[in-house]
Length: 281
Image 1 (cartoon, rainbow, N blue to C red):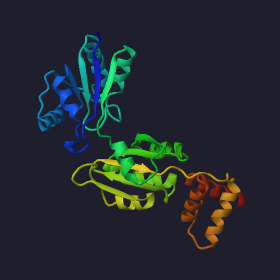
Image 2 (tube, rainbow, N blue to C red; image 1 turned 120 degrees about the horizontal axis):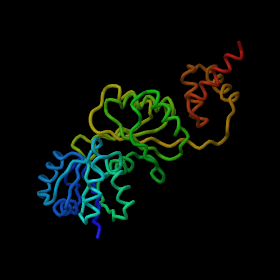
Image 3 (cartoon, helix red, strand yellow; image 1 turned 180 degrees about the vertical axis):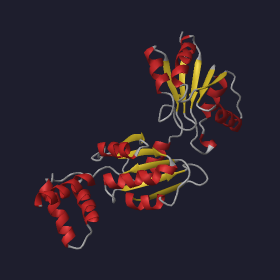
Image 4 (tube, rainbow, N blue to C red; image 1 turned 30 degrees about the vertical axis):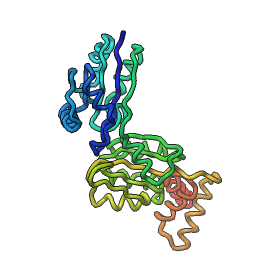
């Protein structure tokens, strides 16, 4: 008989969040595949458990090469436990390749449910939770990041992202540009840890706050796009911008406000204004 692949959720901060079954699986697995064996050692010490099986590393750098080895162990009847540094394997962490390979071999795959930064941040954000989508990490390069954001500019569901603290200010600024400066969001920092912080506000406000520097593990939750009541053509977008400018608003703020009203990316309104200006020359 073939073995079983067990995906185990690990604490995202507070070690006491570890489910009781995690200790049992760590003690009884034939093979424990860990994203970081040093972190695994700290985890097992904190839980007061000693793995009886073989411990191997399984991280982004060796995931492709090690997957066949683990599948071979599963085919031979072993119980393989997969753990990552925090949260559930496969969710922006190693695991997908192994799960796919195990499924292809008709090997049983199960899980030890555990903490999730995605669901924790979503629940704490104060934003709608009935429908959401997880977008993982955005690209590091500015152009690619903007392109990815534009792909979901009209997404009605709440959006959840992971982000590095040193890129957070650029990411929030890009979101404000694409989604609209007044779109609501929440930055969840150091979830379940000593210095946990949930910062809520508009993307503009959060971008200004993040510019001062932020530390820790970051999850960003962004409100979905507003429902479009009426489709506005380019002439109407330009007209609305001019009305606001005539009332004393700066063009940048007028464009942002009209984009939010129309439920379209700010770039769409900006391009319409530029085109209208050229045609008037």
